[in-house]
Length: 77
Image (cartoon, rainbow, N blue to C red; front, side, top):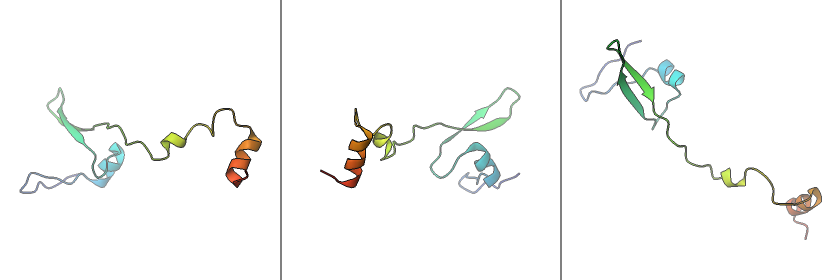
């Protein structure tokens, strides 16, 4: 696979390589020189922003019975 360098020194990473590395828009990569003189592209792991639903994961509440949970979901008082 090849790519053309723009006048700004930019290249488009081929889709097959992006898919293989799991990178997309906004991803950060690092260029590393390896022992044989080649340069490799390494995706940098960033902490993903916490999902707005993350705090809801786990359990419905401390010590609630199934009947209590069902009453909550139905809106029973």
